[in-house]
Image 1: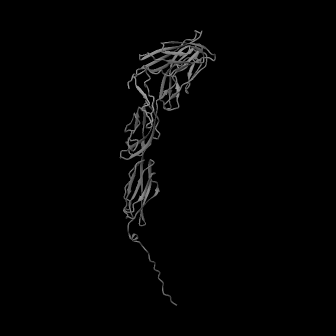
Image 2: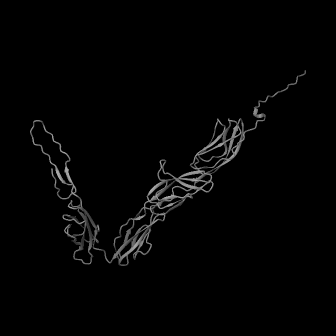
Image 3: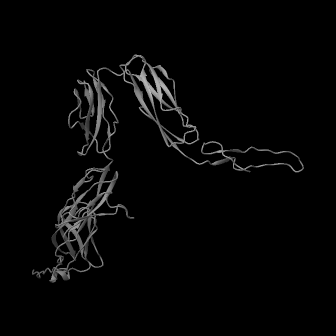
Length: 433
């Protein structure tokens, strides 16, 4: 039995691409660089149709950027705002009707590399800091924008920014400032950064005076400072009183070894090496004073023929634990009274002023405190000053208006009282009604 031969036929379904159509090619030669904080946008093009699709197949785009396909034009767009500097290499793939092409690109991201916050400054102190950048095409030019979208200062008062990046000057006000810095490279690519800068108040030694010491007796006094940039370090640039030393923490201590009054300078420096200095005097005696007073001076202000000012007080304390008898002398005139004129420490003197009949602009007097029956203690003198100003009489009537109420056909005498006086506190003032 003979069999007819069997022929197998296979049909191939081929798309037009398979018969010679070439695949797409990426025509974008390179991509521009960008800057941190500055909006970026670059387009990718190819020879493909409008139906192409774009993607990243290797590497990474700079942080903050993404790749999107424009379905109308068939182009790709890399866009966004870069958030980190550096050079980023990646491979882009374009797909067109199952045929694709790839190309490798790199984008350099320009950035300001100066860290935030900047080193602190101080009011009245020289400030200089150089800003830096990388990732762009040198040279770079730096500038500062307004502190808010609505304007305002771009830099703390007293400072200026050179295009080379040097921020310098002498600050004139204490402030914490958020600088908006812009750097532009030679290809006009820009990057921005926010840099915090604190300008501290002036460095000042706040201790007003030092108490006296006694030879051979331990002495300790802490010096205080404010402003600048803590922590502080204290020193005595020249010579300290014999037997005393200054610690870096600000304690003047030791045991005085010589008698007399010693004038010396204490210096404080802060963490940024700004310095301040103040002159002090320490008196070293052979023995402790028997009495001390506070305050060391008094001042009053009055108006001619006005009301007397409030009284003030002077506290008298013993230099030792033993109570000490004292007497008080007043030199300067009848306008000043002090009570009591004698007593035992601790005690309080009440000082009053009566300016009646005084028409001069100022007067001075002295309150002298002495140790009763002990000439070894030097008298303690307390200066008293009186400032006298003249104020014209000012008529004052209280209340400002009167209100009466009565019934019809109800006879009555209605009375109210008006107080008339001198509002400046002076003497009587004539008036007519």
